[in-house]
Amino acid sequence: MPITRRELITGAAAGAGGLVIGGVTGSLIGGGDDGGGGGGETSLSGQAAKVAEERKLSPDDVTRAVKTFIPPGGEAKDEFFLICSGGHSGQVIVMGVPSMRTLKVIGVFAPEPWQGHATGAAHSNEIISKGTDAKSKPTSAAGGNLTWGDTHHPALSETKGEYDGRWAYINDRANGRIAMIDLRDFKVKQIVDVPNLDSSHGGVFCTPNSEYVHISTMSPTLLDPTKAETALANFKDAFRGFSTFLKVDEKTGRMDLAKSFQIELPPYTQDLADSGKLVSDGWVFINSYNSEMAFGGNNEGGKPLEVGASANDFDMMHIINWKKAEQVVASKAKTINGMRVIPMDVAVSEGILHLAPEPKSPHGVDVAPNGNYISVGGKLDPHVTIYSMEKIKAAIERKDYEKVDQFGVPVLKLDSVVAGRVEVGLGPLHTSTTPRDMATSASSSIAPSQSSPSASPTSPETRRSSSLTSCPSTTTSATCARWKVTRSRPKASTSSPSTSGLSTGSRSSARSSPRTSSSLTSPARKWKSCPRPLSASVSRTMCRQSPSTRSRPGRSTRSVPTPARWRRIPTPSIPAARSTSATAPPSKPGSA
Image (cartoon, rainbow, N blue to C red; front, side, top):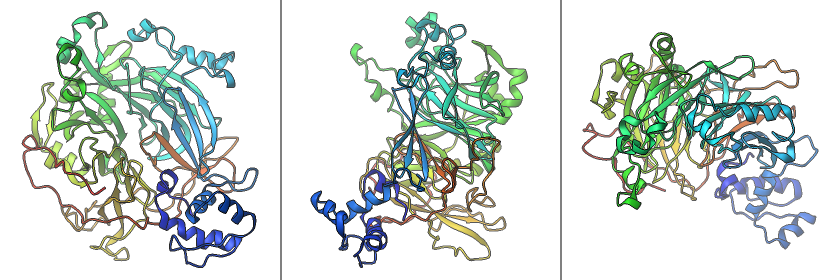
């Protein structure tokens, strides 16, 4: 039986552990007839029993050990590669799951003498050297050649909205850079010092066919460094954000600045981002916080940054039509520090940029596999807010604006674009979708798809049903809220969401059934497409390895047990229509 992520991280799912002890370990080494109900007596024999007794290991401890053990040198391989950001090490770390063995440490932004990266090797020395732009980027010119970085959110290349295992991209949060890693040999091949970006938190993703890799600002960029002394007093005019679309060479995966472009954004603090697909293809979504444009000053008698940046009830999700921007950039862009930039007023007049309110200080923004739902984790709000792309398009079409912000960008009405909200407890960060089209927030475990009570999965009018599950990042107990989502055939009803479920209209999940492998032109190995990232509070992406070969990530179709202690709560209905500026989202503690 496969290990669940919650077992891997916290060891909380004791019921599922009992199943393995009784059904697997017991059959292999004797004893155990509790049927796998969890916590039952299991008899070990021989040396295994002696070790368990000496170390005072419970049956659940033994189960977790068996689930994660991969014998060295044998035919059994880790099911997944875990591609992790290394943070201030400037590295990317590849780990095996479930063994959690470190398989590869990839030197990226910093020299690695122990493995020769940028230390005596001409090829990698050149990559590091070219990763600092001292000509067109004033901050890099002032700081000198960069030999360090802060890796944060990795992204994988995609084909038709599915991971294809060709390349990985990783940002340098501290310096506004991005690196490309070739997954044929797990080595960095390019570092780009992105013009007009001095920092980038988590805005890295690939568009559905890897036409572009995206990276956006975190802290807004000072447009004129010569006016730094007076910039804070004139914050609204002195700073701007930038959404960057770096053109990807379809053969090499390298980024081409000459064919890239940026979109000017308000000077908010942009955070995580994701690309649309299917019904939302051509659109991207970027979270932001600090729409107050606070900059601290408590040492000078002002409010601390954390207080000033949390004053508003809502911040702003940026909704960008990148395909329209691609058409506009040829004729209506200006050049800033060597990069083509679509000015903000042009982006507004061309319908490229819209804003939508979102709970204060959000973090993750994640697009569902069917492309219609966009989940936002309200870091300072106990809800995951789910936006509908169909609603967003309709609101834009009828210009259903709440207001125009101080930079001239139209703000859509919250009630016009939200499909529902799930109260999960304070602190939801990331929402990821499993191969069975369930969603989990932050580091919660995965549960199997279950049928909605309002529709039978075998009904001729119903394609399939699944559950959208969300859990807060701070909980260590196996409790979570559950929100039913019914996926219907094209002719099914597309009524508004209610307690019986949400209809996604004619769009079924892109991952509703196991995918066939898509072979790539690699002399060393063939790759299969991978599932969407199973992200936790750390940045990482999982790709399954085929059992038949050493390094062939593919798709997992295994079933995962439901942790026995989950508490299910009724589905919330859509909040009543109201003015978004009048009240904040409810702030009572969640279920976890």
